[in-house]
Structures are given as structure tokens and as C-alpha cells.
Amino acid sequence: DLDTQEWQHLTAVYDTGSDEVRVYKNGKLRETHPIGYDSTTGDLAIGQRSERNDENFPGRADEVRIYSSALNTSQIKSIYNSGSWRIGTNTEEDDPSKVLDISFQHQNNTHVYDTSGYENHGTRENGVGQARSGDCKIGRGYSFDGDDDYVDVQESPGSFSDSVTVTGWLNPDRIQGENRQWLVEEGDGFMSYIGGGNSQLYLRITADQSTTTWNSGYTV
Image (tube, rainbow, N blue to C red; front, side, top):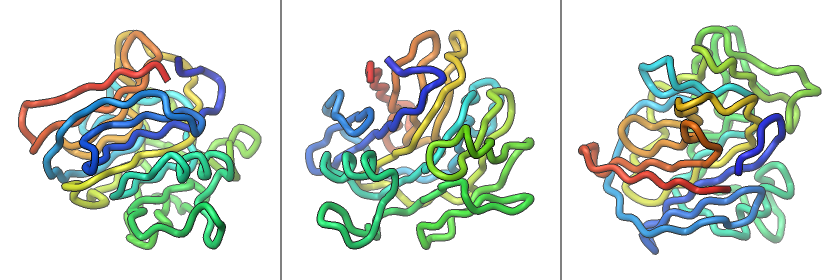
């Protein structure tokens, strides 16, 4: 299960090459499930489901990244072990498919900055901001109150007609009853959240923005 009051590195991968979803916790593959998925686009939010304020994430987040590719187990393990995507090592290189990289280190009064090179900067909504340095995983992270604060990325970091990887460090304060606690949502496309009433990690896929959805519940 997901742990509360403890940092854990979570990754969800959709791989078009194998038409499957893979879920990792702390660099280790926990579940694989087959699925198909069409192209989607939409606004992206971190810490809240878009246009709703009753399914928020309570806790701290750090090093949230999205890739428009399916990272493999070696790459994910390397990110977990190093805490960052470094350039010029034997196991990883700076990846042009990284379309969102919010480390929560760089901000001003209204925005938190994406350092992927694609300038997918986020707007700080309802007072969300940096946690105390001692409460963060790597450098500075963000603290979400679970009520109404979140980071709004107006433009989707890409059209995910191909593979996608969502990864980040999370430290949930609590599991909020039956409500889903949204971690990252991209319009009507892919969404990752902690399931209501349990401590499983879910990845939801909406095929071609239709009503066809698939939810993966994983005890990670």
C-alpha cells in the first residue's frame, strides 16, 4: 500500500509498444496491465482534478515530471536512486521526451517554473507554495493542503498519442475517506490518483476523450 507521512517515488507508464500500463514504487515494478489508448490533449493540473475542489491531494510533492515516452525499468530505477535526471551518466541521458519538469525549486509570487525546456510553467493557485526545507525530499518541494490549492498548467505538455510516463516523489498526509486524491490530471486523457477509501495508486485512461475509461488499481 501507499504510505502516509513517508516519501515514496511513484511512476506510472503507458507504453504503446506493448499496449500496457506499468506502475512502479521506489524504482521497482509492481504491476503490469494491458490497455489501448488514443490521442488526448487538455489542461494539466497538479494536486487537484481540473475544475473541481473536492478531490485534492493532501501532502507534499517533489520532482514531478512527465515524459512523452515510456521510460524503462532501468531509467526509472536510476531516477529513483539518484533523485534526479542527470546528464552524462552510463545509465541515463537528458531525454528530449521530458516535456514537464517541475522540481518546485524555482518560483515567483504567482508561478512555479518548468525546467524541461518546453516552458510548461504552472500557476500557483489558492496559496500553494514551498514546504519547509526539512520537510522536502530533494531541495524544495510543495505542500498541498488537500482543500483547494493546486498548480495549474494551462497548456497540456503534449498530445499523448504515443507513450507517456508520469513520475514524482509524494508524501501523503492522509487518505481522505472515499474521495480520490488527484496527483496529476491531463484534461480528459490520463489521470493518476490515490483511490478513495484505500491506499492504492490508480492510473485512469480516457480513450479519445470518449466515455470509455479504464482504471487501474494497484497496491504499490
